[in-house]
Amino acid sequence: MSERKYIFELSEEEVKILAYGGMPKELKLKLQEIAEYINTKKRIEAVKSAQAKHKKIDLVNYIEKIRKEYPKAYAKWSDNDDIQLKKEFLNGKSPAELSKIFERQPGGIRSRLIKLSLIEINRNK
Image 1 (cartoon, rainbow, N blue to C red):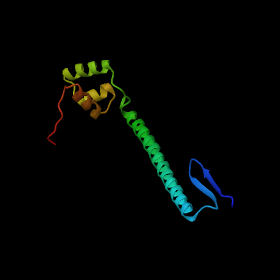
Image 2 (cartoon, one colour; image 1 turned 120 degrees about the vertical axis):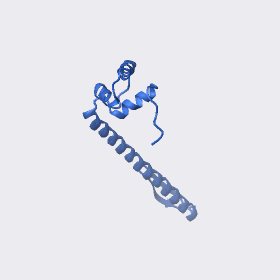
Image 3 (cartoon, rainbow, N blue to C red; image 1 turned 60 degrees about the horizontal axis):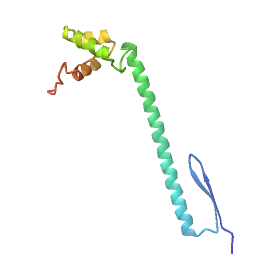
Image 4 (tube, helix red, strand yellow; image 1 turned 90 degrees about the vertical axis):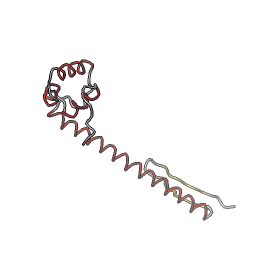
């Protein structure tokens, strides 16, 4: 009886079948198919991971760029910020003026005014 040697190498990047000693041809072909499937999945995951990392870096760079003009852009609103925003808005300040006061983008001010039910969404665009 011949000795059967099946040698596999597994790594984070890929699966390799290094030897097929005494392995039936059908099994060898199936294992090659499985290894290729696993390797394809690993490559796809690696690409997706790299893309996600790139998107995250792009988002961080985008926020840093915006914060040069609006230092508090995308920062969490505090309860005191909400109280002050409501007070200033009810005293007649425009979203543009509030944007300067709160160091936030005009869109961020409008969104917060909507959330605080101080203005309504204009759906007739």
